[in-house]
Image 1: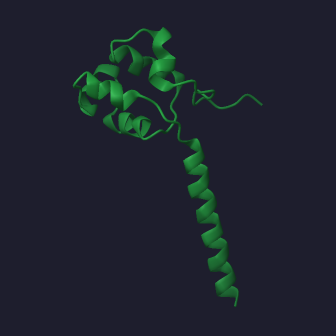
Image 2: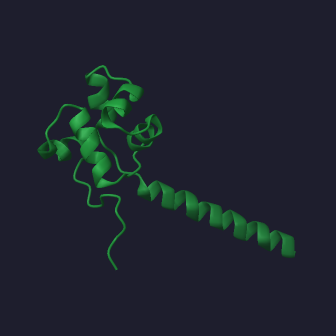
Length: 99
């Protein structure tokens, strides 16, 4: 009986982690713009000075720091004022919230 309770708690915890991961994802246009420019993930990563894994995560909708967004916008040949076109109107910039 105890084992079943522990398994139930574990499943509940896994569901919480999965749902909180989904909440962290924010759609953006990085992939669309990159592909329109005929750039690979590796090429964009090199131009932006970040890893290809970072580009992959951002394209999957994960948030990133403001500095990373700036690097990507510039690497795409866009102006910083185009940030909403690239990343949408995201409230969070990946920085920890002030307490």
